[in-house]
Length: 307
Image (tube, rainbow, N blue to C red; front, side):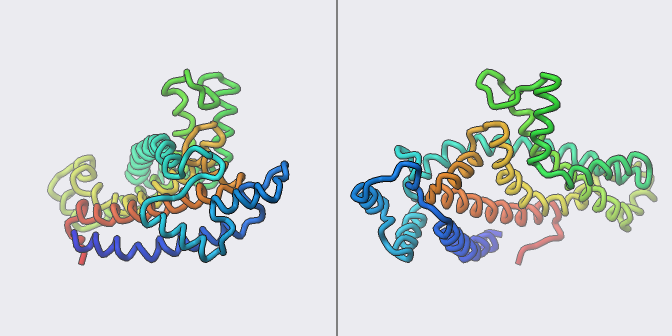
């Protein structure tokens, strides 16, 4: 297992390098610059700023300088947040994004797996059709529609929950962002669990367990649920990354000072280093999460061995 993990990490280096190259080229191909605003700077001051941030160098020189810093774990200074480095901004904002994302995935797994089990055990009944209809609706409606609708209903109309990230709202301010992020994932997990559990319940070992007199609850709990959750586990790696990146929209809607808000502000302000740092951080996170999922495969299903 250790050898497999090391080989996967080594194989991820070219992927991460390709992400860095493409992100660097795309960011620098965008029109405008980090110091272009309504006030026109004198040529001498503009030249001094460009020299200080090495923007007067050629693009290959800038890329090599930036890549050398990334290898050392230094994403460079932020062009807009003058007193902070990109690493400091990511370190301060990511814990909040991680908290919201983790709570969203926990809610999605609990509700999605439960709904999928109910739908599988009540196949082709009213309960099954209701679960699948709600799941398809959740998949079809994007987050940028769900979040404002929840704010309009529960904050503006009913006044049950705060509409934004107010400082005195306590844990109530987490509820709407967490639910907004969790709803699409609940729909996917419910459909995956239903389809996988129906397939597992038709297996030979399940029929043997039924012949021995075990009830359906015991069969699902002790025999069928583990193998049925393998497709859900495969989905979890990209899903967690999608929740964290999807928080870009949610954090803007609810005014949450997380990593997504920094990404949007950095893109609008042409803060090259901030945008690049967040993109690289997310790419590395996706690689690590997918690796964790692959390793957990062997833990859940002993039949799987990594060679």
